[in-house]
Image 1 (cartoon, rainbow, N blue to C red):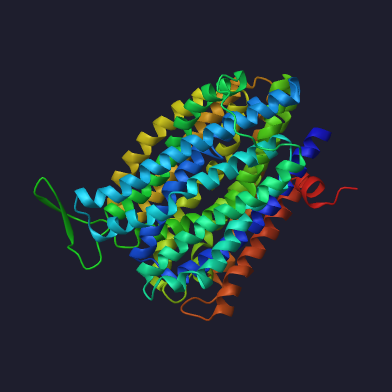
Image 2: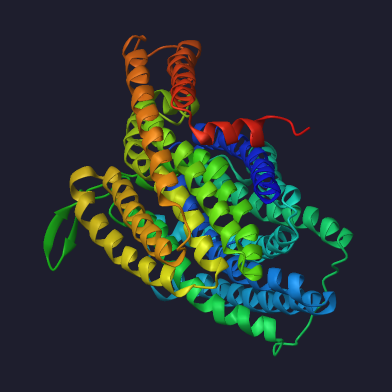
Length: 539
């Protein structure tokens, strides 16, 4: 019971900090949408920002953390402190060297490509922005590595604060830095790119004092034959490919969106083998996918990723101790908690998609057309919120038992499925088709991973999970009916900000109250845990 309370308290810490970060991120996106809208400048920036984020996922908080935390947790449990600290030093040194080399090669490539081939305006802009944003990978990956070390010590507060620092820096930079870059959106977007670099430096700076307080002072080490480091590398390589599959899916959506979007002021068709084919997308497809995804990331980050982040070190510790009973308890608790929040979040986002976008984004450069397109994207993305969140937990459960191969195999299959769905659905549903492809792929991946992990965790009580799921579905159905009735009784059309606020908050409040009341009547265990372990102050 103490382990469960510690885990849930850790999840609370991460959730609250993530909530603060998501709120600030939402404010950041409100300003960005207002200033840049869904035009070519923001399209290019999204691509230029997503590529460094791909490396962050692979070499930072994703693959490296997944490979490092189980091994480092085992060293903390079974080895002396000197060996554990040496493992930190050699891993950090290796990460720095690899990333520095990648940045140098990339910057040379970005500068050379325009010299050897002709690019249209949108791709030229992407490359120029990449020259600014790409060094961010070194900063954010080192931040993620420090966060992994702190999480291994069950310290979650300062790592969870890092994104807050980035969002504050970003918001300030929009008003103080971007105006110095020019008077057009295409020039001012470079100010946002430079702000990202500054945010990376600040995130790293606030982590290091905490690390030092714990007695860890980073020192370069070339002890690459360290047995723990060799095990990390062995785990890391397949993990990179596994996470690459997921990130390739995300990046693939953006590349397809910008490639198949009709250029502003350009032709209506593109040509393949001399055949004219109409562009299936309009300019701004990348932007509406970004803004839609950002709203989806709000519940996913607050509950899904927070739960997975908090659970991972406990999974790893239980696995290192061979304590499979407590492993199963933590795993079941995380799965049920994700479904309890994720399923109603999925449905709620679908039902309230337009009021949310109208209230948050629609102003100045973000037009009513941008709202309609973004709301459509959210409807399809939201179908998979519960799956996105649950897969975070299950993949980390695999990593904690040092099985990195299974997620790789499943992820590789999802890349193929997602590409097929993208190239099929984009012609019928436009950017909504790209969002739907992501949701379908995530759902299939989660179901497969869940089934496979259940075979490994023989003492997991499936009856408890399915009973909890049934109660969640019934509560969500009741909530959905109330939400739909509320939305149909409120005024529509072009209205002021106060009416927009009412149009969102009334059905949202009614939905939340209805869901929790239904869960209370059904005696949902998750509601009890939410109150006693997350909301209620510990005595």
